[in-house]
Image (cartoon, rainbow, N blue to C red):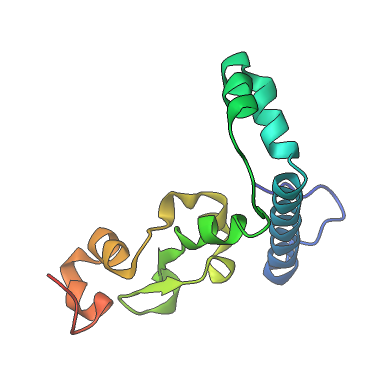
Length: 131
């Protein structure tokens, strides 16, 4: 949620630009935390049981690409503002309110269509959709 005080532009474009900037910074910070192991250290600090588990785990690899696949799992959303009975793909193109509340996202076109356009499932998912 973004709260604008006096002097903050309320144009939709300015608010969208601000939201995109915050999203990009948060994604970058998360990637950095994963790459530097700061995320794992923070998780370990939350619980001694988790710390013991992590201390005994063999953790290796490049974690810098973890964020993108995680976001890709939840990137189908209803195209309510587009005037079509279908779902769109691409978290960066979703409306701000949907990006701020990921409950709108589904992991596939079919599941998005079933959830939001069950009454027009074939139109949403395409003629080759499994019913």
